[in-house]
Length: 402
Ligand code: HEM
Image (cartoon, rainbow, N blue to C red):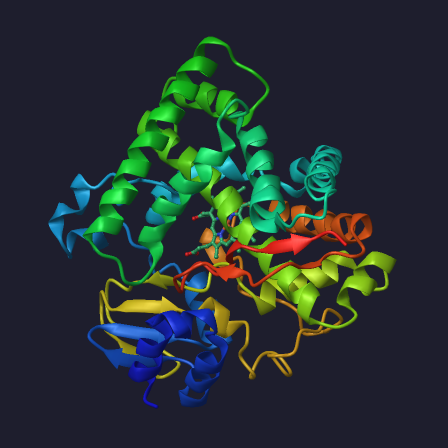
């Protein structure tokens, strides 16, 4: 199959369900593949890594959006000046305000809080499953854990957590490669609701500051010569919230699925024979919750010998890069003890995931505690994979505790 046909297959529901054979087919064609219509696919690990670290390759910012349909500015879901739609100095200015709040030290200090939350979630699961009924692992654990952590960190502790899942789903749906007007309209409505919720929270903390992220950022945004505007503050809080649980939820769901399918993993994690950090590192490589991202050049350039025009869409297939046989020995084998670890799951370079330490910590604490608490945990029916190519995870995963 030609690369363009492989990519088309990947965008089909069956392709997205199991993209790995298609990625393998792309690897056989090369590391960078121009597929026409101004699109360039990058399945190769080294090429994707260099592009992510090269500032000439830009995320979609206002200038790039302006080259397409000019009506994008009327859509709140697209016209959202957050870190992922800013380049250069504008990005650095906001990123530096955020980075110091997500240092390893500050995140590690959450260990006790996260462990206590895990205890509460496991107690709730034990209670719900005590009569032998099945439990949806995604709703009760994979979603509940990271959403509670990020809401606590931000300071949105009174919010209705159940409602956030739908709002975030509608917002992140616009990141998929193929979207229609309905998806944008639903995304707009969700973006407006979340902006209203954060505006209210910001106003509250302005009056009654607490020890939380919103209060800290409000103080910065209200200072003379503030390095961040009010609307940038709101948009970046929305990004933090959504990024803070969507991907971690996907990671936890995929992790349990692998524990169910790979012999010995559950026992190894329970007994401590398999180190949680090694398991999580391999899980991140094997099932990247974000399978792709994109970049543009504003003047023509070359990657691995392939000429790329300015404003071509360069699709970085992170999920494929993580299975690149030129980088990883036996890439389709799940092997926590591998010595060639190092995935592109959190990106690389200036947009490297702000929440990587937090996401790793949550998963490293979650799996041993879950498996020790419920040694007889088994699937209680088929799991529903979420649709789409970019976001990889599950919508529902029924489990039984014994
Ligand atoms: C397993 C979980 C996660 C995965 C796989 C993930 C993945 C990613 C990736 C691939 C990027 C870079 C996108 C690009 O360069 O185009 C990114 C950026 C980002 N992530 Fe995460 N993420 C995860 C968890 C989190 C968490 C928990 C938070 C919040 C605490 C977070 C906040 C962010 C932010 C704010 C950015 C934008 C950084 C920037 O543009 O400077 N992420 N993430």
